[in-house]
Length: 308
Image (tube, rainbow, N blue to C red; front, top):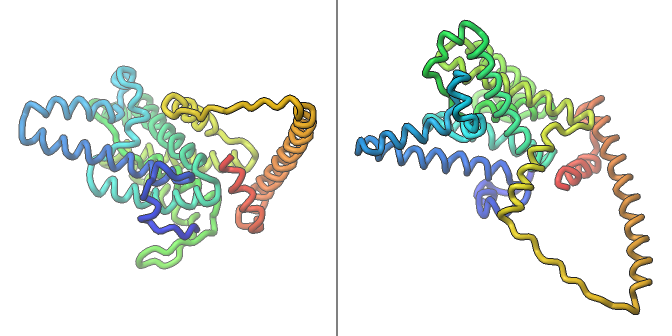
C-alpha cells in the first residue's frame, strides 16, 4: 500500500494521477452537501420545496419503467447521491479502503470502470426485478433509489476476487480476509431482498456480480470496462486543451533523423509486443494461481501497464 497520508491524497485531488478513488469520493460529497443545503433551505421557505423535489427526481432512479424512460440518465446520477449522513459515510469509507487496493494493483482507470459498471449493473437489476417479478411490481409505485452502494459493492467484490487472501484489520474482529468480507456482504444483501431496503439490496447484488465478472474477465485478458475510459477521455478532450506541437526543419539531418526514427519505431513496436506478451503471461498466471502468486517485479509490470 502506498505511503501517502489521507490528507496528501485529498490535496489537489484532481491534479494527481492514479487518484480516482479520492475524486469519486469528493464528487459524492459535493452532491450530498449541495442537496443537504438545499433541503435545509426548502424547509425554511416553501418556495424552494418544488425545486428540491424536482432535482431529487433528476438524481434518483425510479422503479417503474414508465417513469424511468422519462429520465434514463438517473441510472448514472443515482450512484452519486445519498439519502443521509450514515448512508454516505459508510459507503465512502468502504469505497476508500477497497478502492485503494484496486488502484494499487490495477490502476485508477480500472477503478473508475468497476465503479461505473457496478452502478449500472445495480440499476439494471433493480429495474428488472421491479418490472418483472410480481412481488416487486406490487411495490414499485412511488419507489425510488439513490446511493453508491452497488458501485461500492462492485469494488469490494472485485478486490476480494483479485486478492482473496489479503487480510484487513476490522475493529473487534482483527485481521479478516477479503473473501470472507465479500461473502458476508453479498449474503446480507441477499437476505435483505424482501426487507425495507429491498431495492437497495437488489442493486448491491447487481454490483457484486459485475465486480466478480470484471476481474474474471480481466484475468482472461479482456477489459469489459475499457469503453468507459475511452468515453471519458473523449469527453475530457472537449474541456482540456492539448499542447501544440512545434515542428523544426533541418534539411541537412533529414536523412539521418529519418533512419534513426525508423529504427526507434521498430524498437518501440518490438518492445510493445514483448510487453504485451509479458502482461498476457502475468494475467494467465493470476487466473491459474491468483494474484498473490506474482513476484514483486510482475506486480510492478502489471501496475505500470494499467496506467498506460
